[in-house]
Image (cartoon, rainbow, N blue to C red; front, side):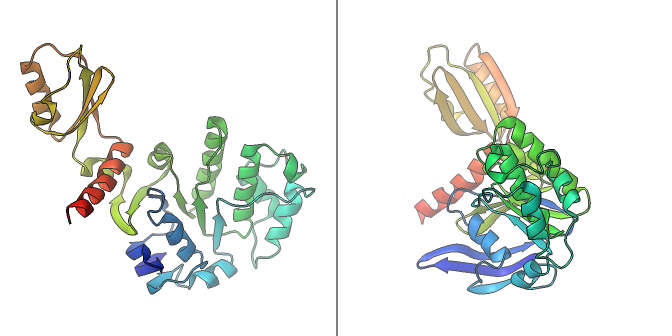
Length: 296
């Protein structure tokens, strides 16, 4: 799958602004970005729901619409409800028959974790089962690429774990997965590669560990013990300061230098030093673009 200079605007808003991106077969890729960053538009270009204004999108060497029609691509979008009075098995069977080389229905149900409720009506499923049904429908055409747009939104923890277990079973067959999510821990745990989009452009691309290292920062937290935190931003290595109640949180590019300087100020209580999380990296990458725009 590839984007080559792909761009899409809606009026004055450039939702996708010249994206270059290649995804290899068998990769599981997370697409991250704030609301309005361009994720959904990029997905719509990938599925042939919109055409790029400039550049090109190709799926397995084909135009997106052709790849979808051939059953090479399956999609699980945010919208969509099961049809009332139709069972899980009936719906997946109906969808499978629209593709040239569908996945056997029993196999799609097993991969999605729906073997047991297969003969239950769609309007009598739990929230987690409805989400699995949408996953089974996306699998029905036996796709080599599946696109998941916020697949675990509104699911409880148990249902989310069950969904990702099903997704990993599909990916283990050598298939390609691209998903967007607001749950950054899901991206860190389930993706081989993470692509961060902001203002329609790619601002980071790599493994979770690589992206976390790219921001070059750690978090130093400690109790203020009644102090006001004045002057903490001037300590060596400190790039930002956050005060939460009686606890200070310093993002620092050199945690050793910051801790030594803190020790020179007196006793430190409740000291905690942790490496950057994916959330830290995400905020640093997207906030830095906002600050750059403000200075232009």
